[in-house]
Length: 119
Image 1 (cartoon, rainbow, N blue to C red):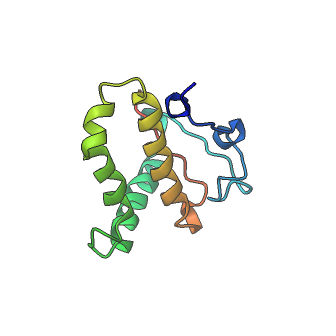
Image 2: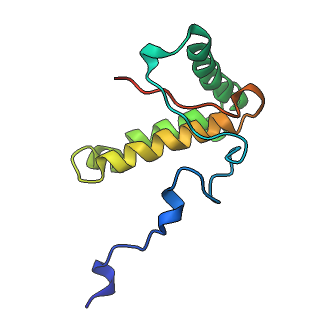
Image 3: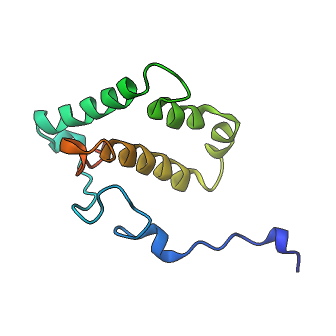
C-alpha cells in the first residue's frame, strides 16, 4: 500500500452542525439557512449589511478583506479545476460556510446570521 494514495482522515464531528470547531457563536445559536425568496426585507438586508461590513473592515486592502479572500479562492487555479471535479459540492459548501462564519464573527446583530440559499 502506498500511503500517498489514501484519502486523509476527516473526523466526523468536524462536519456536524454543532461542534467544537465552530467558534462563531455556535453555543448561542445554530446555523439556520433559509431560502432567499422566503426571507423578510429585514433579513435580506442583514445579509447585504454583513457583506458590506466585511468589505469595510477590510479597509479596501486585499490582504485584510475577508470577502475578497474567499472570493479569490473561488477564482484561483484550484477553483477552475474543482468546477469539473467530484469535490465540487463539498468545495462550494465550504466556501459558503466560511463566508457565513466570517459574517457571524462580526458579532452583534450578525452573530446568529444564517447564509441564505437560492432555490
